[in-house]
Image (cartoon, rainbow, N blue to C red):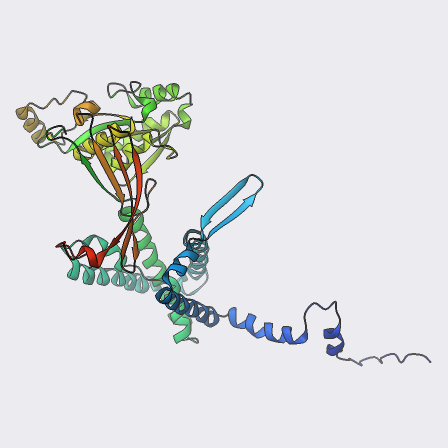
Amino acid sequence: MAAQQPQSGDRRAPDRGSESASPLSGRTAWARNLAAPVRDFLSTETGSAAVLLAGVLTALLWANTDLSSYESVWHTVLSIRLGAGSITADLRHWVNEGMMTFFFLVVGLEAKREFDVGELRERRRVAVPVLAAAGGIAVPVAIYEAFNAGGAGAHGWGAAMSTDTAFALGALALLTPRAATRLRVFMLTLAVVDDLVALIVIASVYTKHVSVVALAERGTMYYPPGIVYMEKLAVGKGGRGVVSLELSAAENIRALAKAKGMDPADLTVVVLDRPRHENLIAEIRETGARVKMISDGDVAGGIMPALPDTGVDMLMGIGGSPEAVITAAALKCLGGDIQCKLWPRNDAEREAAEKEGLPLDKVLTIDDLAKGDDVFFSLTGVTDGELVRGVRFLPQGARTETLAMRSRSGTIRRIQSEHNFSKLMRYSSLRYGA
């Protein structure tokens, strides 16, 4: 009996039941029907915002019920390996430095699209969100300073100025899921400008801050009255007796490279990012050496050449006189070397130095700056840097990391401390955590 063929125009729906029953189908009709709305929900801004809110609420509940397990999850190490190479970091760093990079890339691309073909292609429309962002930065900072000016927390004004872009856009999607396009673009532009300014402030004001102290016998630390700047040259143990402030920057770089058996192009020189160093930086780069610019605080930059795994070989340039003495104390402990010359900023300082009998043309050695063989040095991180991690706040206090050393013993210690604010305030006049 011949099978009946479908006539022209006879369109029959496929047998869904038979398809789902097939062991090769891979997914049942029930799974497909469930996945479709979930996928559609997550692909919308409202769905993504809801997931973000759920994650925040879960984290808040978890952190306030079992903090130790919550922190341990963030310290979980994740590695990606490809052959002999690998990238290893804890979960916190993967989120902060990995996923957030992609987030800002997507937000930036969306903002660029609005500038090119969207609502912001008319430049006059940019002014309003930019001005709103400026107000959103200035007002929180003013409020913060009104309560903290003159106190220990006054320097933390940068924490008050940034809007969380993800939450701002998520809140807009949840509260006004059908918001007008212009309102959405306004919020997007405001958040991007706000975050951009905050990132610039963090990079220039709060990066790699440390708290340092040096201790030695009375009268052994150099003090030049009225001279607040010195020209500096600092190296590690391999540069002792090799470099000199009597030589040019190029000559010192070539001499250090020869002593270390390296090419000048393989050396890295730390220099403070100041206009007065333009000629110095140009001379360094002419030798092929790399320049590592730092925004301020050249104590850390001065001791990095004497520590392993920092990638720094030398510090050059003009910086603070107190920092030079503190750096000398640290380098005495590490076996490095520093040379300095007094650097008057103007004729008034030069005349004052001459009246004090200060040797303006003399090269001050490490022993001139920090005499004696029993010197102590301590460096504690305020924000994350190459040498130590910054302060980590805990529910009852804070955790700090300190680099401590002594010249007589040559001992170098890395100390992690946990500080209980409530106990500290029982015998201290400072209001910890206030």
